[in-house]
Image 1 (cartoon, rainbow, N blue to C red):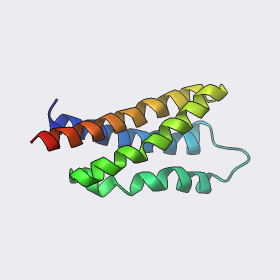
Image 2: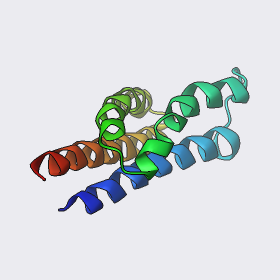
Image 3: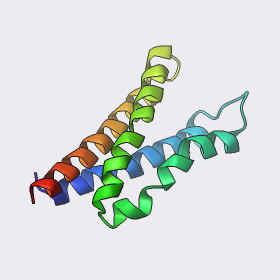
Amino acid sequence: MKEKGFHRLALAGLLGLFGLIFAWTLWIDPPQQFPRAILLILLLGPLLLPLRGLLHARLQTHIWTSLLSLPYVLIGSTLAAAGEQRLYGVLMILLSLALFAGCVGFAQAMKKR
């Protein structure tokens, strides 16, 4: 796969993760004990930081975004193991791993070039 394919995979993972968290927190299963706005800021805020660099296919942004995706794997694993929100956790794991794989693959493809 060339760097363009990895770049698209990273963007799909980031935007999919963003959309999943946004939709799940606001409509599908809103939290009852915690304010939605704070939860959205905590979960979506870090995803907004690399957006511009990923859209412009910057190598350095892909490198540090791969590290940014790992806490979302951990959050998804915790949710999937808890049982109540298993689907949400599994989808979060898949999308964050797609983001990770896309970022790492893009960095390796650019390094070879």
